[in-house]
Length: 172
Ligand SMILES: [Zn+2]
Ligand SMILES: [Zn+2]
Image (cartoon, rainbow, N blue to C red; front, side):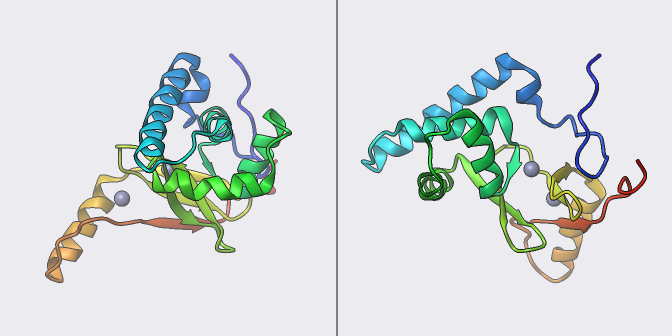
């Protein structure tokens, strides 16, 4: 068994990055989202761009949740030629195409992005190492529906974000 990587706060890195741990899944995911993006680009009459493919590849292999500067770091390691301005210009295109979605913000207000997925989940943001973790809790989901219904609303969508400090910090 390989040793689990530790985050800066001392917490073992979560095993959420399924694509990264399985090369075949990663390739399939990359192929699927590249097709989705190509469709969008064709519809909008945008130019196809090699850079966007490099960005998608980096996201699939390196970064499940990321802020723009986090992605830039990963991107530079793979493709030193892609500049910051290019990345920042292309992020909104990826969001508009539906390939990426904007998630919660960190405690400084910077947006985290992630690939758009079918399965609903919510997030815990670690205020110590600025990583983002996923959770899914049926009771919380149900209570939110009940609460909205109790106020005569039909719940359509929600984002539930927990900001927390890490219990691993200073223990190692
Ligand atoms: Zn939820
Ligand atoms: Zn997520």
